[in-house]
Image (tube, rainbow, N blue to C red; front, top):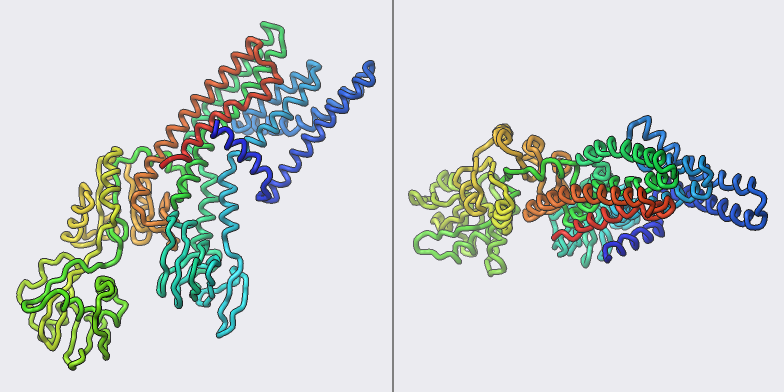
Length: 633
């Protein structure tokens, strides 16, 4: 009952909202005007009959006008369905026959009431499942249409659509971010829930990217524009959601096949009842209650619920592979860097030389690293984590080699690779640091080796649990495909629990591996959407990780994750299986309800007017059953 109340409430609220486009608004207005006109015809005709009971011509004329007002759109849709063999017009075909039979048999009031009631019910039903459209309209309202352009020292308000790449804008606390760009000044927290689905704000500083559709919470920042207004991540999401509304769900073909037999069966049954019982009202009742409203929602209602549920988690579904192949996946293929790993170097090992300790080694390295934005330097400064270290003058970066500086006593400090140290004659003991798996940097002071640092890309915290969950769900094979070295690849595979790993692969090697795996099972490929684009396209289903800001990710994948949460992969598989299950449940429920209503009409329990009021029972049952998807956890 709670779900039923919610559906009814949502329907009425949707009717009250001014969020329709011009075409929908005109259609709604026309339907309401025609319904009011038909009601006036019935009311005036009944009053006229009471006042002038002997005069029947005028009431018949009024009822005929009402019949034409409500009936002509039904007849047009029915003829369109018959000639185009489009069974989405099945309801109109059956209703057209029913109201024509009513009119020809002299039951003029019923010939107006049946299409009138059906159209009102259909309007409420249609509006109740327009959540996807309204969600998109709501997202559009979140888009910031104006921006504060910094022109020299002058701030002026401009249209966001007029911004050009390279310009600088000011984003104040509490304001929406109108464009994709990079922070060049300031620090703040940004609510990115509309894009990533993550409830916690992201801390943004100089050098970080920000995106249209998000909200600046508490700091003033300057942002350099990196994308045109129409090319922002937010615009891409809106485009993709609008395309998702037109997804062709494979189960709809099942409904089409069902309708090819259902409509002739209903027509034959109604004709047989009329001939055998000579009771035309029973035949009309059968036609009315058999209107397949529930069947028309069998696929669309669950899909809309799934799209809504997925979007709330930052998951964007692009096509019907969500239902077709996702439920059949047996092999999941992961890229390593940026997918199973965080995609950034972290300081993982500190090995001091004889006579030195870890704190001294790390402090000297940080003194040099603070003068560079190189990934190795960033990893060192993050690892120092607030510990004190001395900042020296004359620190500079030597491209391709490392960092160079002098301490307070004038001794030369170096942080760099082994080749550089060998070339300048700094002695590194044989085998020192060779056991480290990732990138290795050495530190020296005054020509004496202080020690070495090992850097690795680390696995995401949720990677192992996500792969474990996939296996529990029945995934038979999890594979890592990477261009990295064997030792690093096997280390990550061991940490996350992957079944197999293939390393030192070029893009064409990845494609060959995907094709080989597809010979025996349905393959889902997961990558960062940039260097993995060919593999994502080649797999049965492609999922791009961290698609926010990456146009190629959206273009190359079937499903895009707007965040880097690997837990969304088992979630989306579970959601696809649940959606398919709900679709088949809906089909069975709607057919059983239709057959029950037909049976009641056959034995005279339900009249045509009663059937017009209650024929939507199947549709509401389908909607209630589909709403269970919204509670997926």
